[in-house]
Image 1 (cartoon, one colour):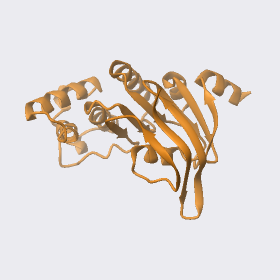
Image 2 (cartoon, rainbow, N blue to C red):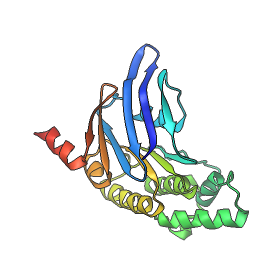
Image 3 (cartoon, rainbow, N blue to C red):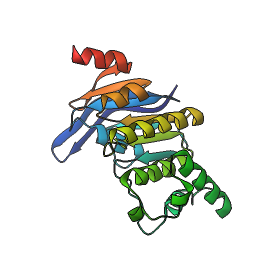
Image 4 (cartoon, helix red, strand yellow):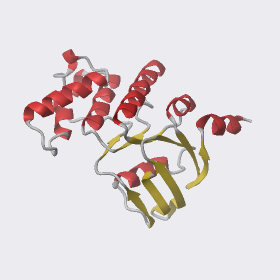
Length: 218
């Protein structure tokens, strides 16, 4: 069963083709990690999956009711506190204000942000803390599909390890489907149920992370 699939997908920026005839299935309930050289179409694929771009050819099929995206840039609203940023994402759900606040606080704590920091504004938070807020904001809507575009790339090694551990635990608890872009081998090995290697806008290989990354170094 697939939560997300791409069929003969093509996309170009101007005259420069980025994706050409790409076919890919994203299994429901698993973490699929996308890797590949810069410019191979990883971010474009995430944007197409999110509906932020429209393919030039082919189609994207989503078997989900709710999706959320975490980018490398947390993109928090600077005039709202951490808890207000998460609560803002919940505004479209049928929750009372008290329920929104409770859920926002719950996910901020689960993402590792201390309660004492919930009322701080983005400018008062470190880069790692802002990324915790962005992760909590995405997970608080309890998506069927979570799309992540190198969300931890700007963080130091220890913080990356902590946040991907939290992401994996929350993913398993929620049973959601996750599509995760990274350039980090360690991240891929820890997270991936399925690893996809892109090359020049097409799927080059799909399989277990350990096997594909081992063969890539031989």
